[in-house]
Image 1 (cartoon, protein in one colour):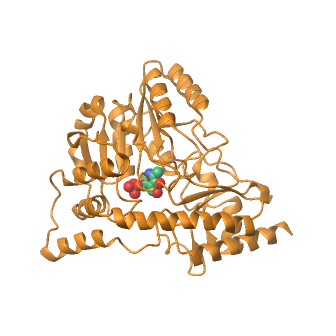
Image 2 (cartoon, protein in one colour):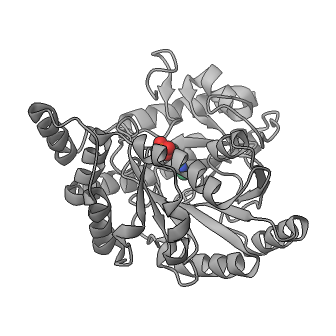
Image 3 (cartoon, protein in one colour):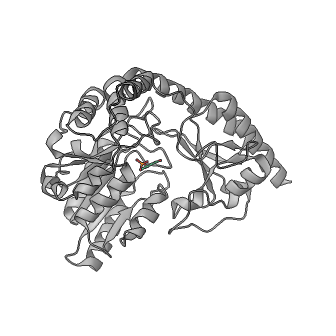
Length: 384
Ligand SMILES: Cc1ncc(COP(=O)(O)O)c(C=O)c1O
């Protein structure tokens, strides 16, 4: 999608795909399956065990219980299906805006209501805002069900929530009877200086869920599979997940994701070193070519959140509803039309997104340099 949606003269730094060769361990596993015709239905617990092993090695978390894991087609379908288990139509689902745009659409399409608890100015979860949102929503819902879809790490800002922040979130969720679903798809992509905390490793999260896959870490969006993981008190809920949900995952996806978690550490380490270098390069390029644009150095993911409000481009409205990921407005429109650089428009991420763009820096340093140079030229042209 990244390189095919726009014409060839456009540098695409928008959708969350990386410009990387496939990890050899993943390619080998897929090749072997194809060669021996191993292309039937998935079974067994190898995928869950591979993730449990990865979690123990990388995050020192040995609490992932394979019996409380369910195969799902991908993380977003998993989010929808888990929300179906713990809420009813019309129920509220809290999100931290600005946040991954499909959170709005997928929740709304399933007849749940999105309630925003915006991030603080520092792009971290504002515990005051979250508590106020939980309190207000609880007041309005009475004894009704409330869920909270958390992005850990956070897309689009690259914020990696700390253990302390997540512990505070867990306390608030318990206090107000809110069920937490942690979308942890970016978990393997935490850059030097930050540490990933699995939400379910935090005390008080026993009634919560985590959604994980190797999709972002190893660039496997086209080879779908993912896992829903239940805390001890959520296991009975997970068992109610209908059979057709597991049926949606592809066996080649299971093979690829299992290989990534089992044998992909070395490739991932090389990737993270490259992303770390690109994160620094991006900082230098923004300072040089886009003075005045705010670059919040991400702690994780390969997404950078650029505050372009100082460029004086007519601000677009925040789209807190059903924006399409290719919708463009404000700065993103300028950078595409004048600079031939495709970015994600900030407004699609909901309240707090207008005037920003999200830039995907998982590309070569040559492409990154050319893109920021072009963006700088278009901003200068606009300023004249
Ligand atoms: C936070 C977040 N969740 C989910 C997804 C999509 O995951 P999947 O393709 O497994 O549905 C993305 C993709 O960028 C994402 O950033």
